[in-house]
Amino acid sequence: MREILGRRRRLRFRRKAREERETAVAQLDAALRCATEWDWPVLPGAGLRTAGPKATGARALLGAPAAVSCACPDPQCVVPGAHPFDPGLLAATTDARMIRWWWSGRPTAPVLLATGGRAPCAVSLPAVAGARALAALDALGMRLGPVVASPTRWAILVAPYSLERLGELLYTKDSVPSSLRFHGEGGYLPLPPSVIGSGQVRWERAPLEGSARPWLPDVEAVVDALVEASTSMPGGGSRLAY
Image 1: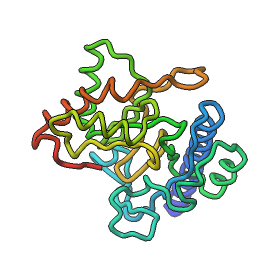
Image 2: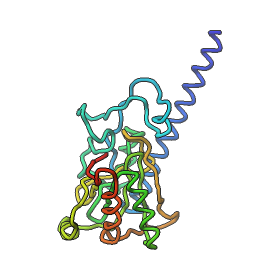
Image 3: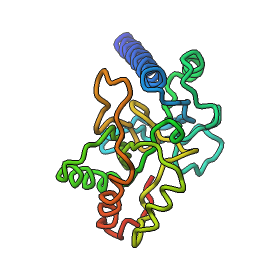
Image 4: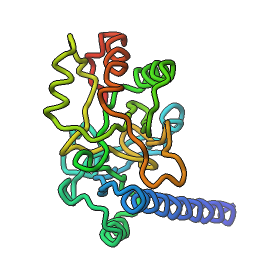
């Protein structure tokens, strides 16, 4: 019996080691693709600290461990794993050598896009409202670029915009739900295949294969549908879900 249990433990260890290697390769490949093929500046996220038994049920389906906390010092972190920690946001780069060095030390760190400037911006909203907004935009025949999805939020990537322009655009709205988040200059967004506190990040609409740089819609073209989808949610979209 002890021999069988020992064999099972060795098999589990080998499987875990193989999964960790595959995750590390996928994270580094994603970071390098963003930086070198698309010219998007990236940096590693804070990552997660896990404890407790393996997830079961709904949490397992979402890809999240049973008990997770952010690897940063804040025990009340509201976006576990999904924010810059070390290095800081200003260190985001497209330099392949620096990216390889970062992920060699933290191979499972989330890939964060530093939004704004020459990089894409984004508008994110709760997942249910995000699915509703995409359906509305598709019905209008609107061309969309990449869409990033986590179990709790979806983010539509848009062309870079300034805070002044965004302010002018939102000023014309009767109201803007607080559940909408705008990722502009000085912002960040976790990209696939990162795992953050809410679970696995994936492409709901992936960039076209072989594209030199993914096409992005103008923020003005999509914001009306996002505001409408968020407002129509229970509570009028006033709940800010991360």
